[in-house]
Length: 283
Image (cartoon, rainbow, N blue to C red; front, side, top):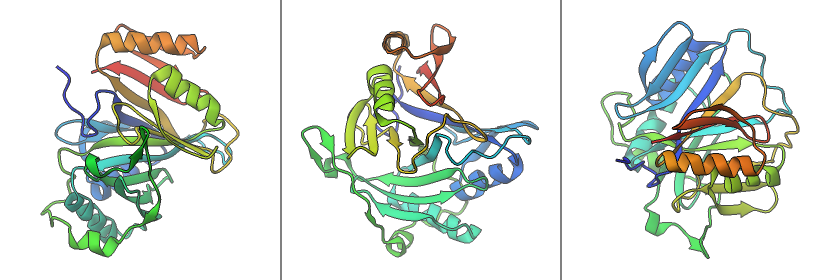
């Protein structure tokens, strides 16, 4: 039986894999600042998450080059917290750690904090507003980027005794920097099967399943022109309801000419137009 995801969807991003050069430093950030638990650890790999789910895999690659400035890849991994109080606790952890926010925004559908991990990977920590409060017109959501009152957010924190993120915390979405928005739309909408939820001119696209505001964000703001390379994003895992949904996604992606790299009955690995690896797997 499909277990409901915190985004309310049966198709969603459940886990992100990153290549890092300093495993200890990056692991400490996601444990102490984001609040994730270490679920498994070897000398060259760590799995982090909560009691309910694994959310992040860190793979040590000490020789990995920095991501080139023109390469496509990760804009941020967005961790969804179950309440405003839990997000306030996360802000308290950020301040206590000495890490600096790179942004704090009210998106009308959510409230979000932005920062970077020790190797420069973008991180968003956010909470959703109730879905009935989301502004929508003709089936499209109307997100915006407005200032967030961080003092008020901090005042509403739960004051949790430890630094752990709540067990309901999940990867809510992933936001990618791509080289061509039309090619990416064909892959993630026509191929993977997400719906367009909002379009910002010809520079950003937000796609999702089951009426969520977005499971994948795509942008060309920094004018990336080369395929993904260097350290950082390795793989994104997308869960679909069952093996029939895996088969349907495989057929759609084959129909648009996407390359399937690994294949089994209940999952497959495919590369998007920028070489970003997407694993489609059955719940």
